[in-house]
Length: 94
Length: 252
Image (cartoon, rainbow over all chains, first blue to last red):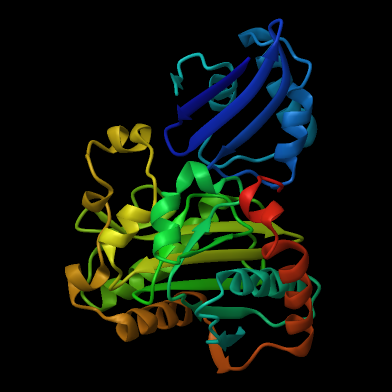
């Protein structure tokens, strides 16, 4: 199952396309007009999300570990924005 | 600080411009190129942010029909439309301001210099979203930046006398974004500097140049690209900026 989320943060739009199998994220692609430094780290976030259960707690854990372990910086948007965009909770389904 | 003023343009090839910009950025970070203020334009282009893909951001039929060239830049942020009424400028320099990774401070400094310059010319402009510039409540400038190896790349795109109808037709602005701003159409959110202030391309160009000399002490000398920059630009053009993987997929 393919799910598309579009999430509008206070400043920035995050789009997430994820492929799910039995409630697990098999593949995910994050696009949009946000900023992340260093830019290459976005691939690391996507890698970490593969194999993670598609629920708020599991995604929150993966996202939080990503920020803590890599030190990635995302001006104007927060960890919570990424979690919301990925899970689709509080987000607009397209 | 002595700063090279670069005015080279690749009007029909935005991918060449962006390859050149990264070449300068890399060589400045290695201490092989001088601090640079570069002003450049294109005759018809759309430039995507680093994390964007064309089909999500562009009205592809319109882009094809009007022969707009699609390119993708090094920095994040949103897609922009470019014609000859729209100026881009890049500031590429070592971080001599002690910015570190404080992007908020960086935008304040670099946008502030331009706002002050406009103010001296009697134009009141603001930066409500931190990385943009508005006049009379409408956006005339968007900016983006990256910092790597203590080197800053800040670039801005300014609508001076651009075809706003073409801009609104080429860019697909998501409903989510417009609802948030409380307007129905992208044409209500953006404006030309000329329409608001009477400033044309040349005056806007001087506003940029003067702003950074007054606020950041840039002392300019005109120069061209170095041979090393041209070589690296060629390499980046062939291996990255002119490839469909970079532009159409989100390869990062």
